[in-house]
Image 1 (tube, rainbow, N blue to C red):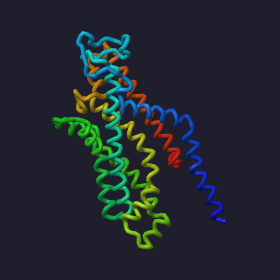
Image 2 (cartoon, rainbow, N blue to C red):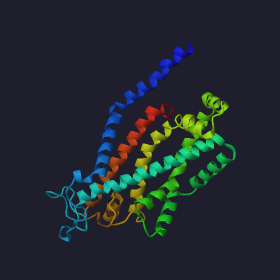
Image 3 (cartoon, rainbow, N blue to C red):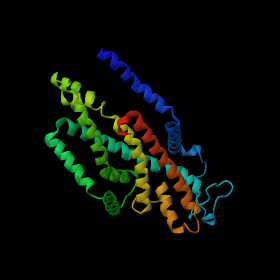
Image 4 (cartoon, rainbow, N blue to C red):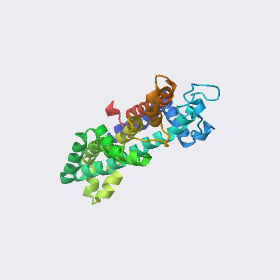
Length: 288
């Protein structure tokens, strides 16, 4: 009798997920995200103009035929710069999120499995980072570095972003470690690596998957904010943050310099956030 009750319940979970994945609230942001990824991967499909081909005679000109976004202060085509800037911004978002997920999976599972000293060290380290203003730390570190490319900015963002995701993973893994099938596996002599990889990790990963999409949007925003403040990426790098930084001094005279990069940034971040919310509802309904 218990098995008969459990079977439809288990079968209903993927059915509910499939229904959620077909809803417009996830299909629309997923479509936008796929389009953004395509722009980042193959920007040449969307513009044939070299973003570094500049003519000072066009400095600050607004939208004209053949140049829908106008020109920046250096006379470069703004549309091509926005298109090519997608790659750096999205790359940083995915790199930082992937790094944080990897750290969260390792430290979260180790802390939950071993507990005791290991859990204490991981938890207290996270508390130290939580108690320190992330933006201040990022600004100080980046301001002391001479080279600020995609790799450097991503590393600094990972340094301050991993604790939040690790705490979530630790909580999910702690709940999984106490389940009967995990205790049974340990009782049958399964080693720590086998228990974590085969049992704990697969049953604790859903919350991280949902938060990852939110994290990508957040890291794209963080990179743009740091670059806007003058401590992130800098020319000749092309990113939305670089364009916002260059536009701040001439916004009153040339508002289009700030408008179009901001629009692309906002739509992209909103799409990732909406996708993350929908994935969270699909894979972790208890968080709703």
